[in-house]
Amino acid sequence: MLGDGEPTHHLDADDLADWDVDTLTRCPGYVVLAAAPDLAGRPAHVRGAFARVTAGTVLAMPFARYLAHDHGVHLDLTEALIWHERPDAKGTRVRATASACPAGPR
Image 1 (cartoon, rainbow, N blue to C red):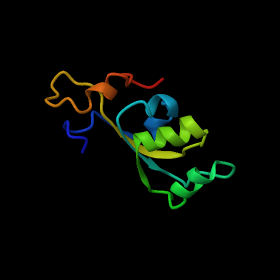
Image 2 (cartoon, rainbow, N blue to C red):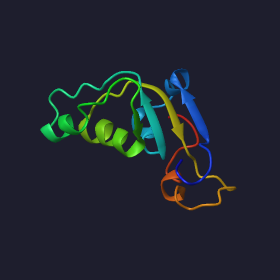
Image 3 (cartoon, rainbow, N blue to C red):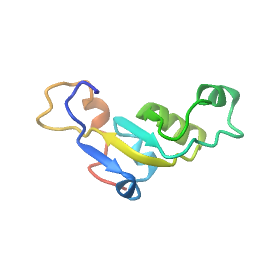
Image 4 (tube, rainbow, N blue to C red):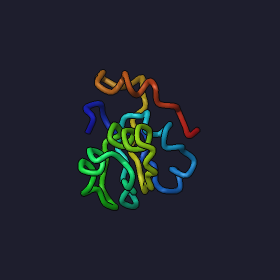
């Protein structure tokens, strides 16, 4: 998917309870939304860009971080796929962001 093998963690809703969204969205990967985010009161460009996002939508982590961190949108997540930096990884595409990803929940 991201060009550097399989994700190192597949987190379900129970696993995600241990993660805070700010920490999770620092990792390279994807999240699946359990519900459409509430965009009320957000700038028009945010509401327009994410107007069609519904439950089940898969968001790449930069989009999830943009909503949660930059605009304070609560994201109700049902699952996530994340990549950590791995010593056996052959590629370097994920290495820069994976190195900032914690080894576990915080």
